[in-house]
Amino acid sequence: MTIGAIVLARCTSHRLPGKVLRKIAGKELLAHIVDGLNKCKALDKIVIATSDQPEDNAVASFCQSNGILVFRGSLTNVAERFLGAAESHNLTHAVRINGDNLFINPELVDAICLKSIEGFDFVSNVPNRTYPKGMSIESINTRFYRTLYGLFYKNGHFEHVTSYLYQHDDKINKYYFRSSENSTAGGIQLAIDTKFDFERASKMLSEGYQMDYKIDLELIVQRFKQAERTMNFRGKYGPLLIAEIGGNHEGDFGYAKRLTKLAIDSDADVVKFQMYSGNTLVNPVEAPDRHKHFKKFELSKQQYIELAEMVTQAGKMFMASIWNVEMIDWVDKYNPIYKIGSGDLLTWPLLAHLATRNKPIILSTGLATEEEVMATVEFLREQNEIYTDPHFLSVLQCTSMYPIPPSAANLDVMQRLKHLTKATVGYSDHTEGASAVKTAISMGAEVLEFHFTDCRDNKEFRDHKVSLTKDEVLDLINHIKMVDVLRGSNTKAPTQIELDNDHVVSFRRAVYPARDIPKGQTVSEADFTLLRPCNGLSSRYIDQIVGKKTRRALTKFERLCVEDFS
Image 1 (cartoon, rainbow, N blue to C red):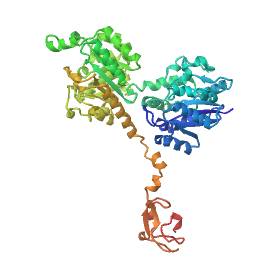
Image 2: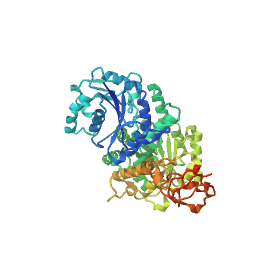
Image 3: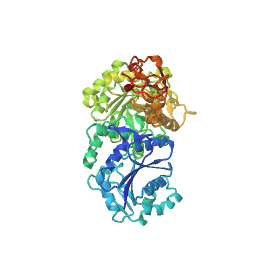
């Protein structure tokens, strides 16, 4: 009997490209996983199963460099790759481990392996989850898996290793593993699926959690929640993306729901509204037309609650700019972050009320001077010291006009605000198109607010003109991911692709004799030539040998070393 762990790993993750080789706490994610599995007593082998595509050459190279078994197979037929890895290494039982499972629990792996050899064809801790996502373990009898493989392919399960087993588990000799250690552990996300997950795990490790692979679920849940507290303004793909429906529903609740569904589908992190009543916002005598406009755009309390529940049930964050203090009490349960629009930056009574809620606040700074921004920031911090923490206060550069020309975006203000406030900074967009928001991302915006609509054609209300559509938000997300890929690491060193292709040697020059040189001759620079590849003495060291004598006879173009001269 041979039991092995099959780690499914590839570099072409859609949500977080290259994640398996990203370094966390100074070590590649894949290295953490292998180190954890090496602590397991029940495993005979550990095999990395990656694809046979060029994009995964780096995974294979990593395995070869670190003495780890590797199997290469189909990118898309993951079931076949899993089975091929098991059979090529003669495993009687294959333990499926995902390549994003940083927090390996050796004790749990061993327990599931031991249960497998009792005679169960399939053992899993996934159904009715009591362990975090990211600690999923499935052990499968390889011979049994082979008998079912044809059904996987026939029924379209080839992209998923075990989905067929769960759908037909009434016919399978299975055992589902459960824990009673912590009732909330099953609800947390430890798998490194997105940049948000990666940053949260990095914070857990940087703030004291030790990767000793002795998993205490109580402790890990505690550290998870502590780390997540510092992620208020981080989104799934990095910056927090706020799709601002605002008043684009124009008072039509059915249209508000359609826009909400589109915003959810756009994969923005936050779906945001503006909550107000005309009577508590605009003086009907001083500005009757504006008063009438806001009255027309009102939604009811119950309608806002329905929209909030629609958003949260879809796994997104609901947010609203609250322009009416009376609304705060009933919306607070749905609103994890409060947004203050530019027009209310100096409405300090409203801010004082919100500060008592101990929730993160985002301030837009359209219309404001630098002095006014700092006065409001200092006022908030006087009300509640929590707002000295950049994880609880974000300040957005904004120009309050609809639309604005590109020259009015003033994106450089973001870094000035960061320097002055020491808060999280971002950008609230009122330009047409996506150029400004894409540029803001590249300039370090950590919060990005943009208006959202279904389309801009034939719309009279001004906000539609400055709004993005679902497809444009999806394109923005792809841009963010590419920016993240291009940013890469801040460590200057040869990259893996340069090493794999031997370019460190082939692109650089070495010192070679330009002619045959007898022993004992004092050499000059003219005696040498600098040529590729860099074998032997690097060209940077030529000054160290010029003026010295040869210790032996040198042949034209042969490799040299410093010891050849005295």
